[in-house]
Structures are given as C-alpha cells and as structure tokens.
Image (cartoon, rainbow, N blue to C red; front, top):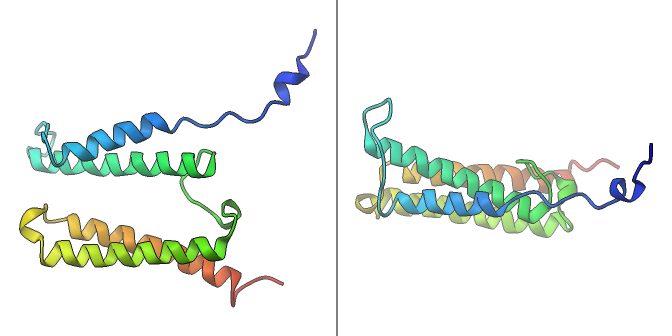
Length: 145
C-alpha cells in the first residue's frame, strides 16, 4: 500500500469557530429582541430566554477560544499566551471591569436588565480575576526555578 506522507505532514486544521460565534451572537441577541422562546419544562418563557442567552455566551466563548488559540479547548493555560505577564494584566483589568459592570447593572440599571444579569457578570469577572491571579502568581512568587 502507498502511504501519502504529505497528507500526514500537513499543518493541523483550524478548528471551526465561525458557526459558534454566529449562533452565540444570535442567541444573545434574542435575549434583547425578539425574545423568541418556548415555555420549556419549567413553564417559564423568560427563564428559557435566559438559558438560551447563557448558551449563546458559552458559544461566543468557545468561538473566541478557538479563534485566539487556534485549537479546541476551553481553558487557556499559560503555554497558550505569547506574553503571559501582559496578557494576565489585561485579563485582570477586564475582570475588574466585569465586576464594576455587575455592580452597575445590579444596582443602578436593575430595572432595565433581568434580575440575574449582575450575578452572571460578577461570576464572569470573578473567573477572569481568578485565572489572571493564577498566572501572575505562577510567573511571579510561585515560579518554579
């Protein structure tokens, strides 16, 4: 049998990210307008809209991860970053921005957003801060010599 060595030596194929991004954007947009929903097993259309919005956010994250790191996965480890120090400081800033947005939406804009919006933004911000702190500690005081 003839083995095609050129096929085995090709660069790995870029994982699909566009469809996840488009579907995620549509699901998140649906939480604002037109709010298409169904009662679901919990008999609440608004809860179903929220669940679809969270699924949309998950799809957007998967799309971002695949586009940014050119691989399948969900958790960015330090080897994925070209400059972990700079990237983790940016990530820390974005996490703090999410925490501020959670406070702002949960207190000042509460009447304009669904009740759990602030909680979800706070969760995202906390996860970003946790990840960036881990990286900063790993390249700083806890670095292996």
